Amino acid sequence: MTDPGQQYLLNKRYRLLSPIGAGGMAVVYKAQDLALGRLVAVKILREPLTGDADFLARFQQEARAAANLAHPNIVTVHDFGRDGGRYYIVMEYIEGKDLKALIKEGAPFKVERGLDLAIQVCAGIGYAHRAGLVHCDVKPQNILVTADGRVKVTDFGIARALASLQPGETTDVVWGSPQYYAPEQAAGEAPTPASDVYSIGVVLYEMLAGRLPFVASTQQALAMMHLRDEPPRLTLFNPALPETLERIVHKVLAKEPSARDRTADQLGRILISYRERGLEATGTQAAALPTGQTPPHGTLPAAPHALEVLPEAPTVYRQPQRAEAPAGATVRAGDALSGEGYAGEGLDWVAVTLGFLAFVSVAGLIPFWAYVASVYFRR
Image (cartoon, rainbow, N blue to C red):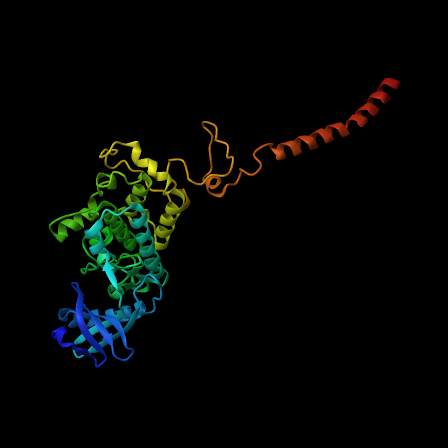
């Protein structure tokens, strides 16, 4: 590649200004679109990959699919092309940092910040899932964060169209990054939306713990840890973390795809529900154990779904003048969330009405029985 300092002109339209990132598949440059007069990001595939015709065909097909994704939390793909032997993708240029850099600077994050970023990631990835795409390589390096906290998920270039996946399909090519890919990806199986959910879980774990759940010196060792090992409890590294949130992350990192949330949308709804209804209440969770002490490893119950993610601590949401439930009473989840059953807590008007009707019915029979008695005694 010509030195970008010489302002190489790609396809007589995109002037490469400076490199801004690099990975195993491509190098990304900040560039100027001369036709439209705007800054863009241009990703150029590394030359070893351009010699594989099958890979190029699949890459181009899926780049086109990614270009149809229009969502506030996804980097927009503007163009795909070729200049000589160089294949490239032109994308929206984002002013900001990738999430990996932010994690290195300030993790573990506060719960509020980690949830906000994770929910935005779920929104972008969930939109792709609904469009029939699996990202396959969710990691902090592919998550850009603007100065005002807006998340932009990028690098859908290796995303695989769901329609092209076959049940039970295996491959010698493992899509994704060893630190973040799901157990089924480590085993060479086709990734699914649940695979992206696992990767989001690893990212969330890293934001809250300040480290990855699995660390090893080789890719093979990492793959085996994803396949076999349970992740260390988050509270080992962040004792103040609410237990309910720890259970949610633990569930997302389940080995079996069927045990996780099926799509990023589902995980996003759980995190939103937790944030809106349980965040402040869980502040008392950390006080249950002395600093640095946690229950034995492996004792976490499966994290609940959707509306069941409220912590055991008293809920923040309360109805006015709500009476406390008697000891041993069963309270439905819907009661606490919707407030049903709390309107008119003085008299039980249903019971009063039924009693009145019963009284009227009995009283109405008195004249009849009086008549029967008079006839009987006249004999």
